[in-house]
Length: 202
Image (tube, rainbow, N blue to C red; front, top):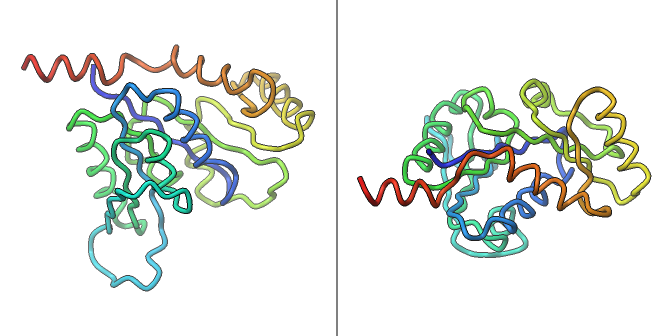
């Protein structure tokens, strides 16, 4: 089997996308994972005709990519990618898979350019802002991850989504984190260990 790919999206900033990735990586430390943050922000960087891909080797809790490394990712990358360059970033992500790494990506916009095994969409009920790119991720969402400190609010959101036939979890409340991780274990195909054995034989 090829390495797996998960994309984690969300409707706004600070809704818990990185936290969701940390939980997944922390549960799968016996596997090879590359974690990628796709950002549209180039700040004061020069305007070039390709995405700016920055590898991170410092496990620093103050950065998203540093948090990926602390959680167990073998490799972490920040990809500063304007819309016109998403195809190139998608090609880079596929190359990571070809190198034998499972890949987890934090982005909405990249989903149209990849074929992930699973798409998770993170929702914070108390944050009203919705990115325009949310629709891209919602169209392909396999499960929702509800993030709120209010347990009653979280469980009500999970029930409401379940009533609509949608899978949802509220990590941080009761056994919801374990339930999410168990669901991922069932839904994901065989991962890196079988692939490593395959490539070592061939």
